[in-house]
Length: 89
Image (tube, rainbow, N blue to C red; front, side):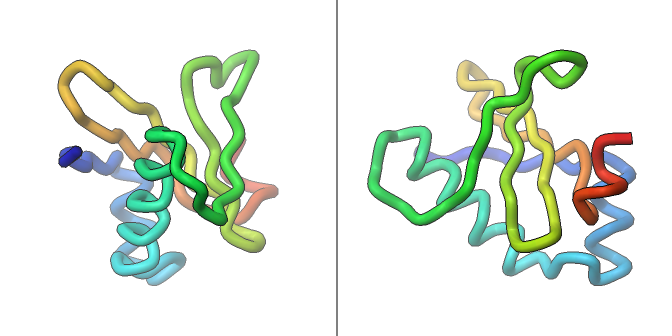
């Protein structure tokens, strides 16, 4: 299933600063989509709670990708990309 990807200003800035390359982001999102379809992929995903309820967190080493999925519109909104100590602030 095809999903459109939308980036927040913060996520777009992280891509421009090379915190995470576009290719690595797309690979992680592709694995995430496979994970949501119950396929066996090697990805660390957690459904978030509290203030971040409804969001998912993808862990890539020390980096975190915080995203929200709209399954009806087939849109993945990447809210934040960054080191684990800064991304939740």
